[in-house]
Image (cartoon, rainbow, N blue to C red; front, side, top):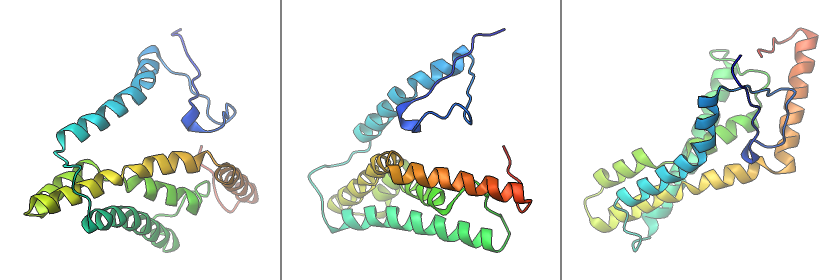
Length: 178
């Protein structure tokens, strides 16, 4: 019988061992323990190798950041709502529209591909630097998402969404997939 651990991290919100009972093998625990360190290392590796000239911040910086953030959030929200309303891909009853918005906000972090495209799409060094800085600034959405997920409003919304899903499941209108 292999050793098992139950792990809960601060970024996962309040501990809810009732619904999230994780039993991991030693290698899985090792990977999970190093994940945050590796993620920070990858971020700084990307920053160091992206060739971003931090001296150039201009209008294109704001345009790229806003395009990534607003475009991804609205695009994901619109397509998920459309797919759900048309029953092409019905939304799981345990997932609320706030969850989809958070997914869109997380997806708006545009580092690798956005940095590459910024370097290829613009001819001048200044425009490339402004666009790359905009892509890097979209990474701040990660901080926004983590902070938002820690608010009482967010945890309350999650609780209400889960309660609503289970009421629907008991009424026989929707099946809840565990």
